[in-house]
Length: 190
Image (tube, rainbow, N blue to C red):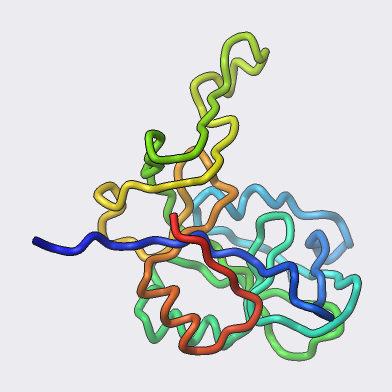
């Protein structure tokens, strides 16, 4: 009998004392960038640099998120390359206010239909009476997220179809991030 793979929601630890907080990303002209595009599992191309204002300033973290966008230090990029995950993620160069070294947006390239509705604490769907015909039948809310490992295949980093606000990693990636001592990360098993 083979052991079941384990998966974890990866997110930014907002409770680190004295930490920085990244703000909404902007383009060269200072206009806000549509953040939803980073959750759709597609390769993205940008003409100019993407910049992240920082307020309040504080200790820089190697993994941070703002508006669902994951911003990582080059050490995370190097770790993912060592793990051979280049086909699962795109690293988009970014500038972070007050930082001279390179930072990157971690753009996950896979969306997998894997939510295990029966094991989640609560799953709500958009209904016809919600007056959102474009959303009917899709997830409205997912509490206590659980995934079905049998539906994930060999993926190590992805977003779950229907609930794109979550970034999920395999136990292998979780362990590597922890072993590397990447700052700013937090995990919850899903």
